[in-house]
Amino acid sequence: MRGIKKHSFLQTIDIACKYCVFRAGFLCYTVARVNEHPALPVRMKGVRGEGATKWRVVPLDIMKFRHLFGLSFLDPPQGKTKELIEELIHLKKWGKNEGADEIISVVELLARLDQNPYLNLAIGKNSPILSLNREFTQAFFPRPPEKNPLLEYLVSKYKWQELPIYTTGCSNATNALTACLQAHGVEGGEVITTSYNYVAAPNAIVSAGATPHFVDIDPATFCMDIKSALKAVNKKTRAILLTPVNQCIDLLPLVKGLEKKGGEVALFQDVTTAIGSTLDGLGAGQVNPPSHGASVFSFAPSKVINGFGGALVVSHDLEFLKKIDSIAFHGLNPFNDEEVQTFGNNFKMNEICAAIALEQVKKKEALLAKRKQVKEWYDSALKPLIKKGEVALQEIQGDGVVTHYMIRLKKNYHRVILEMAQRFKIGLSHWYAFHLEPIYRLRFGMVTLPVTEAMYDKIVFLPFHVAMEEKDVEYIVSSLETVLTKASSGKA
Image (cartoon, rainbow, N blue to C red; front, side, top):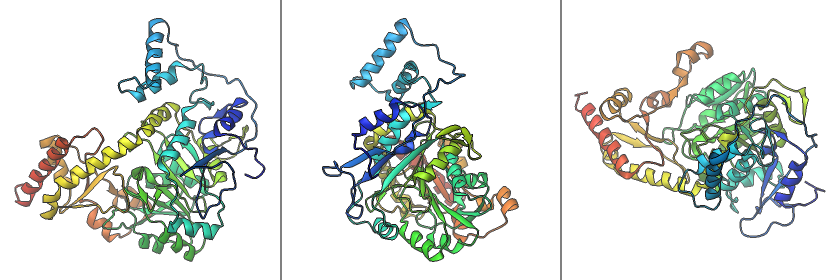
């Protein structure tokens, strides 16, 4: 930070990449964003304008350029094929293409391997992974508000002088969560999470060598009950894994509660189902309290940003992300590939997925607006069923962006899901209560979670995506009403 020669962002990137080729997933986390904030004085000059931000690259040890062995190159386009591909690329560059942004980006990536010869093996300055990390944080992390209770508390407690945001890429969110937990050293301890969850959360905990300590959910938000989580903290607790669904969770009560408990309990968030949501002016995953706090964002097909795979890990702790990056590249030292420094896996990000996700990030405003529109259609269409007491909606804090539209039925969902599929060809989805699953009960013992047990088999996800039209929502809701009416009349 101090004594660093000031360069523009593009100059710094060029300097960093001119002499080096970096591993896939490595250089990504060295890109830092510093937000201006009254409580976070920025010691770097040149930041001007409303909401201005400054990017920099953390100085790296220079790696010698090496020719890499064992590369298999694709058959390059030639003749008419090359002409058609170049025409597509130029149309997109000048905004003249009619859709297919993601497809053209992948075609360009594969057709121009001469500009990125080590695709998915090492990162060069043309890698879409670099662009994705930069563009995602710029798009989804707003300038912090002048007053935010969580940020003010953390600044006061940890004496932060700035708020750098570091990111690194992984192959998917499950692997990213596993790497976070492994890097923090949870093996042999417990990680607190909700039983009502997506399977990735408990699987990541087990894969990292820890025991999932399941806690209850809030009956209104369907997210972790903070009081239940704090009550579960004990001497074996190594971390808490939160899964915010369609909203941001207020972290301040949890942070203060953990402080009273003492010890080093890491706080990780799987904000996969909260991308784009904000609370009190901060985006989901934007602030990650120490120690080793981090958030994971998935780019799976069902998520707000679809890269057909891939994930980002976001933290303020650069050293922690170095550990994650090593784990994601087989345990090798990112600065010295002749040193194996930990037990790792092949968790590195795929550049093709990054190219697709990058195009989606550029469409952020349209994607979020459509999701909010679909939510409004559902909220309106469901009012008669809500009035009858047949369904209840999830309570969402702050400005939430829906990934999974969740409703709670009056009775369990088994027959409803079956009949909606068989009769109307509509697929509903749901999560599990993992503390009730035999494989978890046999290995980790039995636990009682009253709210989860009363609700888990009544919460269903209605179809929800940006290609939906209002008539689709009306058909789904009318079909649901038919099924629920039949069930209530005893004809089911």
